[in-house]
Length: 307
Image (cartoon, rainbow, N blue to C red; front, top):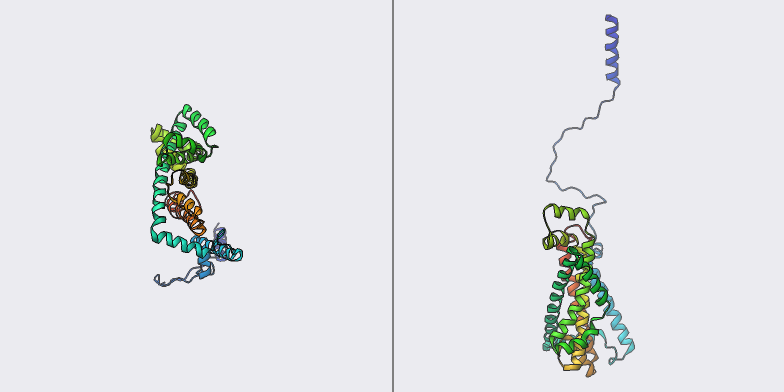
């Protein structure tokens, strides 16, 4: 019995001796304040790479390329009456700004735009809220959008002149029409895409009616709503400029559109291009600054949209 015990003990000792032991890491002191070396993956980007990754720089380069092509083509055409150079357009733009004419006309246009755009957004919110809370509201919104959304806003200008006369109310009316249906359609599509899980969570907390729309549907559908705001803004801006051109013909009043029409009558083509350049500059500012800031603070911050 003792021989058996000794034999088992010896076997156990042999197994422990042959079993590999894990390596022991040597103890040491490390300076945690020392800078960590950057590997190949984390190496700093060069100046050209940093500029290439900057969206603002890329857009600026595109604008510079367009201006260069404009200048070269105008010099090759050599017909300032039909197509002035980019430098001549900048000179006319500077003269219009220095004299105060362009800022004054632009301010008149922006006042009208903000009034019509704001009313259009309020009406779109009301129609869409009714559509997502009641069946009658859904039928009403679908019927009205099918009727009026294909109708160009500028086509309603003659009726607006008959109903409201020559003045700002007629312009506001056509702006509301251009904003209302585009924003309402995007809002409604965004609300319909909200998952049922979020809807049930809102109902669990007792949210109904407009509180349900404000606390559940709007945050979840905000990317679609933001797209509708952009589309509505673009429709309103171009509709207003076109309507002001007609108002310039009719009453000699208006904002930036009348400035363009007035200089067209005097064959000052450079000033006409300066007015058009102002229209495009406002569009770039609204899209690249205002809406981009809203995106950064909302949908991108929430992880709902890629940068």
